[in-house]
Amino acid sequence: MSPTKLLLALCLIASFNLQGQSGSSLDLKWEPKLSFTAKLSPRWTYNLQVMGLQFFENTDPLEESPNVERIDFRGYLSYRFLRGAKLTGGYMYRKTNPLELESGFEHRLSAFYSFQSYAQAWRLAHRFITEMRFRPTINEGRLRYRFSGDIPLQGEKLDVGELYFLSSDELVMSIGEDYLLVENRFAASLGWQISKTFKVELGGEFRLRNPQSPNALHIVTNCYINL
Image (cartoon, rainbow, N blue to C red):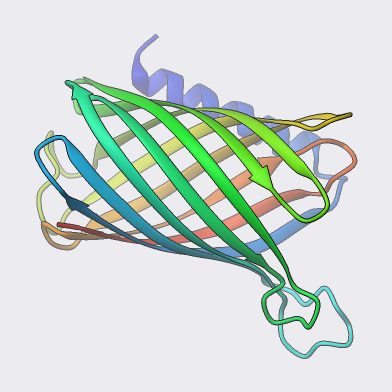
């Protein structure tokens, strides 16, 4: 199967999931991200991120503005050891309900293995992640796999000032002491390469969760600075 057909198949699967879940509740949220990446050497790079998550609608009738669910601060160090392959280690600090008097927090450690290849104009990437989440009430391990692809929309190669399309599908498995939860995340975005070091993306990510939890649609806005 060609990369184009594979990504279209993922889109169809996600649309069927949306139709199948039309009767269940759906949380609509905004997820902005600012990412900064720089090289330490030809093989080593580091990445810093600030991310947020906010409901579009107010979930608390006593509040006048929509709820801010969380703010994340992330840092990663990556080593490229083969052509297109990379190992990454990272740490995240999450502040949940940061505007509330009783806010929470989370520490997270992550290890990534990723590799990419090209099929005509498509750039395809596979990413495997193991995570440990440390929270005040419970700790949790997670296994994640993501397949993604992006393609220029104005030629075989992405040039400054041009648009590109990207899509991904990720399976997330959360493992606790007495539970196992599985979540599927399908995302599609439109990107704009504004300069050699700066690009922006706008899109959506649908999260299909277990029947006990509401599904979620995140409107994603990303800004990337790469030096």
